[in-house]
Length: 93
Image (cartoon, rainbow, N blue to C red):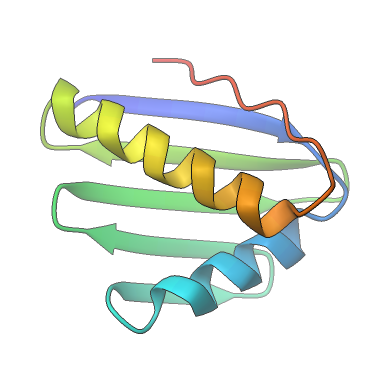
């Protein structure tokens, strides 16, 4: 199973995790506690952890195609939830 990871500089990581988990909870399996979140998609899993300086996001997918799709889905939702805060999201495999 391919894995991708991004460390995103932001001091609002916990808020972003909270917003994403609430957004996806109506249609996906979501687990959230304090500054961590887990979202189970049909094709893989997204794990998020925040500290005061960064949001770390890891995606594990069924195959490379699914990984590419989930990277796009997670990145676009993070950018939308961040509003005017610019996020530099660089995925590393």
